[in-house]
Amino acid sequence: MPDATLSLAVQTDNRVKTKGGFIADGTGDITWDYKVNTLTAVVFNNGAYGDILGKGHIADVFTSKYNIATKTPTLEVEVHSGGIMLLLIANLDVDGQIVKDLRASAASSDASKHLSYQDVLALTTSLSDEGDVKGLTMSSELLTGLNIVPGVNYIGFDNKGANKPYNDGTEIWGQGPVDLVRTVSAITLEKIDLPTVSGEIYQSVKFEPKEVFVANVKSTAGIGASSTDNITIEQTAKDGVYYLAPAEYFKETGSLKYGISSEAPAGTVLLEKLSEVTLEVGNAFEPKLSPCYVYPNQRGEADFAKTEDITDPRNYTLLVVKGDYTYRLIDDPTNTPVTEENRYYTVIVNDKRFGEMDYSGSTEHEHIKRNTKYNIKLSIQGSGSDKPFTPAAFAHVAAKIEVADWNVINIEQPVD
Image (cartoon, rainbow, N blue to C red; front, side, top):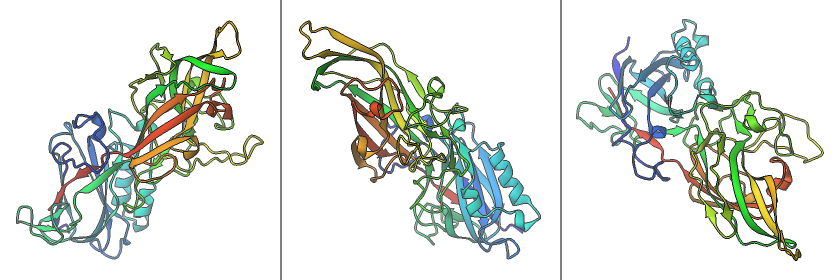
């Protein structure tokens, strides 16, 4: 019989603690991408639920839905004392299929139907569900070594074993507040500039940007990780697909994009139309765009045959800018400007081969890992390409990418 109460108190205003990086809107305010709208707590047996239920298998699932995410929501449930493991997941749909499957597993009378923690960590969410209505999916690492005692238990308030914070219970975690880490990352085009760089036969005059979009975006991602060491690396569904391009470009092919996308995520910005602007040579333009929220994509796996174009095709996540490029031929006596319309400039996000990387706000890595911001500044240095996914699209663009860890959401959880 349950002989203890598990109480999770979550607060996203004055209990949010930053861990590197920066606040999203630059003011210190808590914006929607920081909020916890729902919380799912998954309890795994580590001795508390006896020997019939195997260790590491799901024992209970508790959820709470909060109407005002910046208030102080709590989740109080009865649990067994003894050894447990705990996984916290924010912003799952508490009436959705993942939570239904977790509840069914925990309630099954057949011990073999109880999912292991490895099974739960491997469950996947869809990029199409990420957005400001539901909130961004976040998860903790798997908390192990927890020993709930009868009575009051706390997590994240003091050193392990301390009778705090209210002198009515015991701290059983003692490693500080538990971090919730977003599954998504954010790609933002911060600036486009047209430097006074001359080619052998031409010199730039102006650039008129029209669109910016991302391609080769993973459609699914794993729900969590077993430790903080790998919680920020790629957690990709085995059967996941790529959103190869937004609708306007899904039929385009090239050595950097294969196949045709069958759907596009509703919860993320994949393509942004730019307002009319003329970028004269020697100047820069800050488009002030919304971030593109994308899933981890560090390996760019591709399950297709190798082609003659490149020997090892990969679906790395791309940022593409489309615009009209104007130049003058150096040896033209009339000095007449020539405009090439609908030119494409493409970079692989966070790839040293295609630009300068600044990791002062993060640990060095390649491509897209979770809970990371990629702020990109592009320099247009030539006429680009008439197609977005060919090597020529990379020839006349340079990128500087600032990489920063997103502020990690911390939740302080009294467990009693």
